[in-house]
Length: 114
Image 1: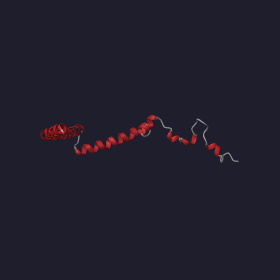
Image 2: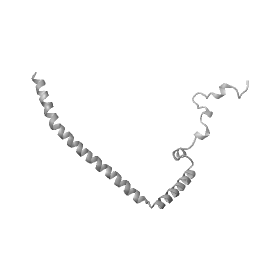
Image 3: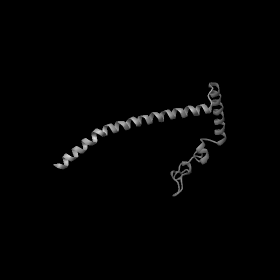
Image 4: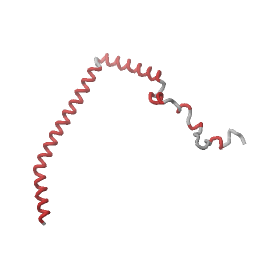
């Protein structure tokens, strides 16, 4: 029997993982897994993309401060709209409660009196 074709060689020892089950590419450091590659390569990619996006923003006349204030104004408008909606919703609840609660109380009094 040939050693290369022996099915017992592919089985791990009890308590030990099979060496072929985890290829070398899977045994990367936590930092490399988090970054998605080597730190130098990721830094180079981010630097290139930052230059590219910065150039496009400069051509369009957009600054980081302007982006921040536009985002702030958009969030503020959404919050104001949401608060106005809750204000209207609260009025609907009060208007309905003026009718529903007395009717409910009357129905409870009639049920109890039976």
